[in-house]
Length: 389
Image 1 (tube, rainbow, N blue to C red):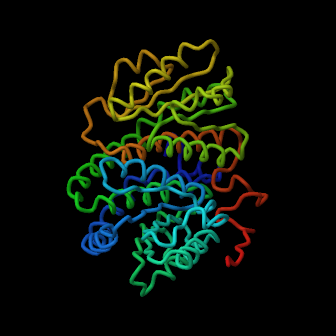
Image 2 (cartoon, helix red, strand yellow):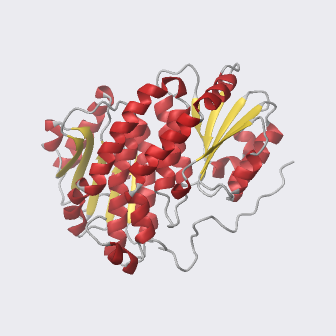
Image 3 (cartoon, rainbow, N blue to C red):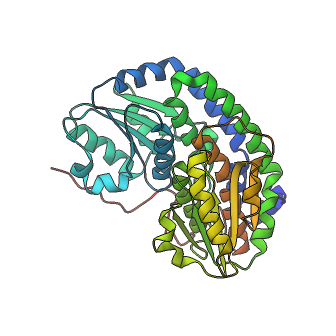
C-alpha cells in the first residue's frame, strides 16, 4: 500500500490507517448495496418528512462528521425547493435555542463514527425536547454504539448502518468519513438512485486507480521542505478543505500547520499565511461558472512572489490549469460522467488522506495513534452535558 509493505506499515504503527484509506472503494460498493437494499424504506421515510411544510433538514456532527454535513448540504441545495443546513453538534449543544425552532418541522441527520460521543446523544435529546415535530436519520458506523441502540423501535428514527469495517480502528476518520458522506448523498437522492449508482460505480473505479497508482503524484510534494499546508475550495469543496486540513493536523500532531478557506475568502486576510514553506492546494469546481473564480485565484497565487508551491486538483484534465500550477493532479484524462460535487469531493479527499498519512511518517508520528499522551482521543472524552431547562 502506497509504496510500503504491510510489514513496514506495522512497523511504522500505521497499518490500520493505511488499510482504512486503501480499502475505501471496496467499502463504497458495500455502502451502495446497503442503501440499495433499504431503498424502499429510505424513500418512504424521506418522502414523508420532506413533504412537511417549511421543513428544515439539518446535518450535524462533530469534527469530521460536521464537515460531512458541509459537503453534503452544499451539493444537495442545488436545484432543491427546500434548504439543507449544516450545523455542528458542538454549536447546537452549547446554544440549542439559537438553532432549534419549536414550531418548524425538522429532520435531523446525525453523522457519528462511534455513535457514542456526548454531543451525538445530547443533540437527539435536545431536539426531541425543543422541537414539536422532529424526526431523525442516524448515519453511523458502530452497530454497538448508543445511537444504534436509541434507534431501535423508534418510528421517527431512520438508522443507516455503514459497513462494519468503516468503523475505523485508527485515530483519524477516513473510511468512516467517506462512507457516511456517500450514504447521505444517496439517501437524499433516493429517487434518482439508478443515475447516482452509475456515478458511484465510476467513482469506485477512479478511486481504486488513485489509491493504487495516482497517489505517487504526491511523492515529490512530500519531499519539499514545507511547514504549512493550505486547502482552498468553494461549495462542497470548502467542506472538503476543512476536512483535509483536519486530517493533516491530526496525523502530524500539529507539527505541520494546516489551514482551510473558501476561494474568495482567502484574499481577505487569510492569505497572510503564505510563506516560502507553504503548499497550497486548490480543489477545482466542476461547475464552469464557479471554476472561473478558482482559476483567478490559482493564477494569482501561482504568480505571487515567493517559493510557495501551488497544487491544483481537478476532475477532468484542463490545459489552462496545468499552465498555472506547480503541480497538477487530475482524476481522469478522459471526460468523467460524474457531475456530483459530493462524489468528486470523496475522490479529492483520497489525495488529502494519503498526503496526511505520508507526512505523518515524515514527521515521525505514529498514524494509528498520533496522540499517545491522550491529549486528543479517538472518541472525545471529558465533555460534560448539562441539563437544559
